[in-house]
Length: 358
Image 1 (cartoon, rainbow, N blue to C red):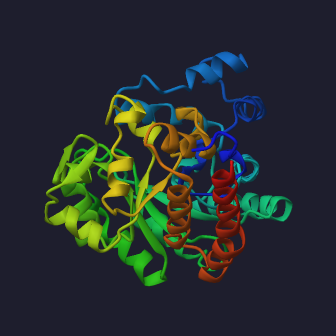
Image 2 (cartoon, rainbow, N blue to C red):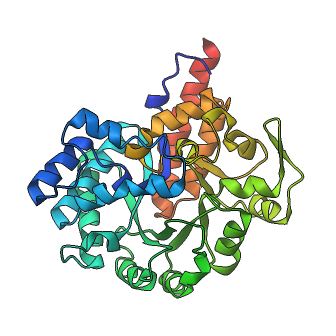
C-alpha cells in the first residue's frame, strides 16, 4: 500500500469490541477511587497499563482473568455510562463509522444493579456519545457460557429492542461449556428478532462453530478462526475445505476476527502467521476487530494496519471488508446502507485513486 495513504483517516467498522475490555486506564483509576475499589494491582497509571497488557497471557482463560478489575470498577450506572460514552468517543476518534459494542450486564450487578439497569446505563452512554460524535453504536449484551443465567440476561436484553440493543452474544471459556447449554436464552433472542452472535472457534475446534450455527442458530461467529482446522492450511492458503468450512463459506457466515487477541491467547505465534488473509482470499466473510482494546493494546486502526502489513491486504481489500462488515451488522439497514454509500465507498474510492496517482 502507498505509504501516503493514512489508514487512520479511512472509515472503519468494528463488530466485536468488549466494553469492559476497552476501559481507559485513567478512567479505571478514577472509578476505583470513587467506588472504593481497592483490588487494582497498582495505582500508577503507566504500571497499570503495563499490567493490563495480556500479550503474554498464553491462553484464553488467563487472558480473561484481567477482566475482574475492569468489571470491578463498573458496578454503578454512572460508571457503566461513562465507560460506554468513552468507548464510542475513542472509536469515533479512531475513524470508526459503524460499531457494535458488547458487554455482560450480569457482571455489573454485584452492588445491586439489575441486568436491565446495567443495559440502560450502557445505552445512555452510547446515546450521549452519539449526540456528540455522530457515531451511533449498537449494544450487544452478552451472557457467559460458564454461568447459568443466560435466559435471565436474554430476557433483560429483549426488553430493549428498538432502543439501541441490536443483538445478543454468548462469551466466556469454550472448553467444557457448549453453546447449546443455553438454548432457552437463544429462543428468547430469536423470538425478539435480535441478532445472535456466539463466541466459537476461538479456543475450541470446528465442532464449537457447528453447534453455534446448526443447534443455536447464530447469525455471526465471534472469532471462528478454528474453522481452518476443517481445511488444509498450507503456505498461507486454504484448500480442501471440509463440509463445515464449505458451509460457512457458501452461506457467507460472518466471522468476527480479532488477530492480535488470537495471538495473545496463543492461537498463532504472531500476526503474520494468522489465517485472516488466507480466509479472506478463500472467500470467507471476515471482518477486522479489536476484541479488547485495553488487554490487547490495539485500536481499530492498528488492526487495519496489521491487515496491510502482516497479511498483505490492499486498499481495495479494506474497502471490501469494511463494506461487508457493515452489511453483516445487526443495526438498522437504512442507516448501515447510508454509511456504506455516503462514508465508506467515497472515502475508499478517493484513497484508491490517490494511491494510484502517486
